[in-house]
Image (cartoon, rainbow, N blue to C red):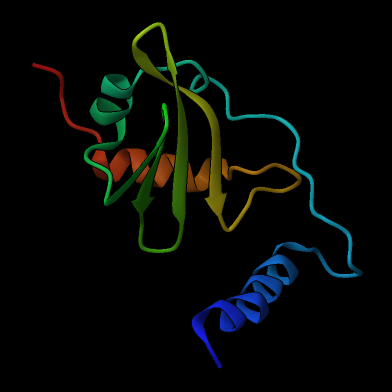
Length: 115
């Protein structure tokens, strides 16, 4: 089997993993208060250095890992500066994409005093 044909089942598995039980796609509402619109420097001050960064054509995703959760910050390039436009955590919050308890734990762990 060539790599091209092996990619098709892998893609199908990935799409199935995104579906909620019952075959419906899970949709979250709301964003965590106070984070949307913050610039990248403000996120670094609050949460520290991300463990992983992915850059794609003017968009960046930063991942932070905690003891019991992970947070993903999605940035758009707005007027030459990166600003948060979406936040998610794993596990997700109750009906939202981001769990406030996870974000608070990551903030307490990574926050550094401003000098």
